[in-house]
Amino acid sequence: MSSEASGDASGDASGDANAWASSASSAPISASGLTRRRFLRVSGGVAGAAVVGVGGFELATRSYPQTGTLLRSQIAMPQLFTRPLTVPSVLSPVTTSDGSDTYDLLVRPGVQELVAGHQTEIWGFGGTFPGPTIKATSGRTTAVHVTNELPIPVVTHLHGGVTAPASDGYPTDLLLPLGTSASSAAALSAMPAMPGMPSSAKDPDALTAIGTRTYTYENGQPAATLWYHDHRMGFTAPDVWRGLAGFYLVTDDVEIALPLPTGDRDIPLMITDRSFNAAGSFAYPSVDQTLLETPGVTGSFMSGVLGDVILVNGVAWPYLEVDRARYRLRFLNASNARRYQLALSPQPAGGGALVQIGSDAGLLGAPVAHDAIEIAQAERFDVVVDFSRYRPGDVITLTNGFGTGNTGQVMQFRVGRAASDDTSVPHALAEYQALRRSDAVATRTFSFADENGVWKVNGQEFDPRVFAATARAGTTEVWRFVTDFHHPIHLHAAHFQVLTRNGAAPGAYDAGWKDTVDILPTEEVEVLVRFPQLTGRYVFHCHNLEHEDMAMMANFRLV
Image (cartoon, rainbow, N blue to C red; front, side, top):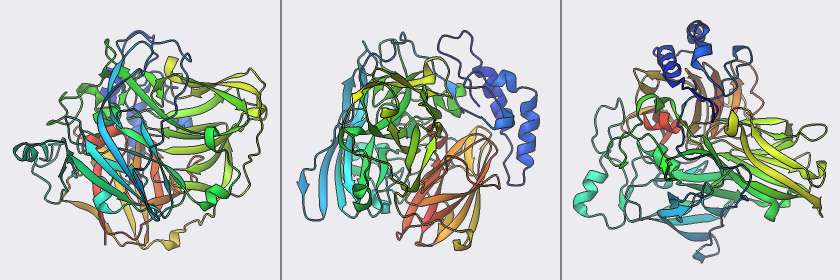
């Protein structure tokens, strides 16, 4: 569970929390319900000591806010809501033809003022954090030439993209630094010894490049808020922590025809948590600070690293001045291990301030109004907020119900005067075909659990040479996920719909086509996966990035 406490609290309960987490998760989980009873029995005597802050441990409501350990910053916490929100720049294509656009994207170090008064070296696409936004059109090909000027290998994964294997960002398909010599390439491309893996041999199917690699995205999918990030085997967590992430927004004719907010009122919001050393550099508990040889984190952080500074688009606790009009806010949780419960405070009269219009993989069939939204790592929620429901001069805080102290607040909106607004949220958004269990040609069960300090899938640590499933392209299957603790599960290339949660109906935040599903401790979730017309090797994994780096990942093959 979590050992987070408020930023100004005294004491540290991480030792108790992580000792409890280890003992409670040592046995494999099964779909029989035995693990749930075991979990209740183990937690009953120690829950109060194990979980500090983040809303507590509430079995009755299944409110399990976090899995992870808080890494405290050494800088003084800044005053909240004193710096304006920045919106990532939009990358311009270097060439454009009738059916495709080509981009150059340089991966390099940069320096940014993430926290007021501190200069932080980041690793960024385009040298910024977040990286520049790439805007794509459904059915129109995007080619991205990525050049690596970092001192480490990188792998670029388009999260949510329906992408051919060679461009998907498989974790061993490394792009080595520009100028890497032939003698150095062999050492840099060796497979890192992730905890529990049988060897550190080179993956025989890895696609290694030096300096520059071209990723081709056909964009054969509807409008959606996607994102791209590093996916290097064993080092995804520290690489993303240092800034290797950006938005990738797909549009289509259906979206364009809708009267939704656009332009300056269509705002992507990348929400992350980070911790900082005294000099303002990123703090992160890597076993290997060079990020070249040995994956993993130190001590109690294997459950996940929680930062104590909340950044939105790379700015700590920013504010945004808004008109009294509708805005489209594209929420992305790009944190390593932190979940958020997002809400507006105060709520407008009548509630329902966050009108969800889209999920991970596209627009919903119809809008859904929420007072709050729970968003796990890598999930996206597109919402419309009508700020005309507030008065001029009102100050609205986007809060995090799963945080405490400063982590309980995300950003601020400052409402201005009335403005022209011809937008609306229609009752029907995009055509949505609900899948049925009878559509499935197979049912598979996958357990996600810690065994002897290694996060495993079906009792196996990740090995690029082993496949957990082989499915036929173009078919639909039921995949059943069962967990020990909190694990947000992400499938590459394939989108899905949530079928059941604990044998009942999907949850309040499960609507629409998704690529990541938030699964709470000891839950069982069934999803209907529709595989694309692609063939080759892909992965699925926990998107708690510390869990992923410590072997909680598996292969599936499309044939």
